[in-house]
Length: 140
Image (cartoon, rainbow, N blue to C red; front, top):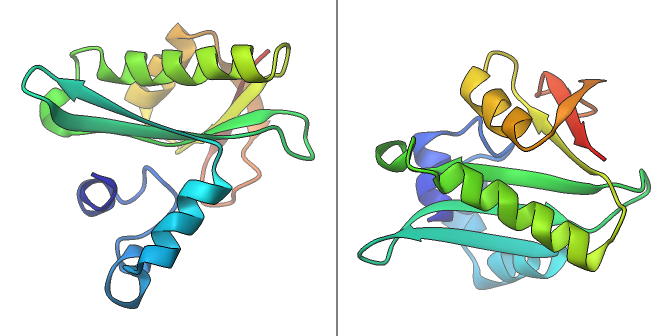
């Protein structure tokens, strides 16, 4: 699932397929990702096919949890998968870190993703601290 998202939509996660392939496709690399990122969610449709992923980090120096690496397979878009993933992150943040804002970075021009996040109460918080992204969105 993770490599499929990097192959099909490399701009969505802030990483590259090359970073997770070849020498990067090592068990310790994948285990490090699972260890260092607090939450990983997968969404499945009917037959048990995994069609979307998202991750989130615990609050850092900024005091906010961060939603990262959301991706939904293009064939499953428009079916509520993105909404389920965002809702899952928000529920986790509310349960594990009550009162903590959630932030994310979205690429400039990614209007579909921006609309998804706005449906869940995210608002524009200015330029993203990640220079590869356009805007940071925040939900308090």
